[in-house]
Image (cartoon, rainbow, N blue to C red; front, side, top):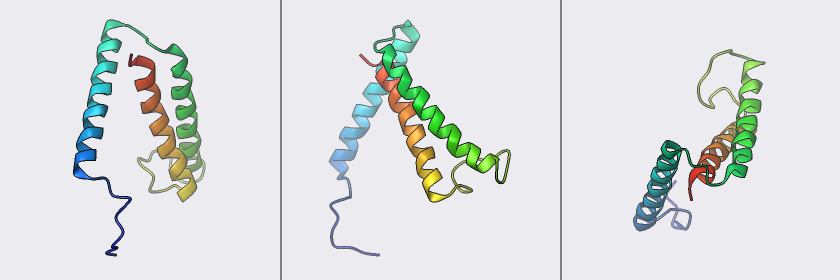
Amino acid sequence: MNSVMKEHVISPLSRIAIGLLVIIAIVSAIVNIIRGHVGHPGAFWIIILGFLLFLISKLSVILRKKWICFGTSLMTESMANVYRFGYWLMVAGILLTFVD
């Protein structure tokens, strides 16, 4: 599928800028974790919410098909989206908790 409209594609410059921001946030979080400084402890609830979403989507596969599985291949489309969103919330929660 070769579409003329490409407004959903991120430009190379934007990719670099987003990558740099993510790297800075991750380094800042790691430094604060090593120092034992928790900038925003309330953001830990975002991690818990993300883990619950992750757990719900994993349980949908465990209860139906397999005990051990990796990724979203055995999930329905909606459960796969819940799984991805849960992962995203956990990462965002860690960054929000430890980044100043």
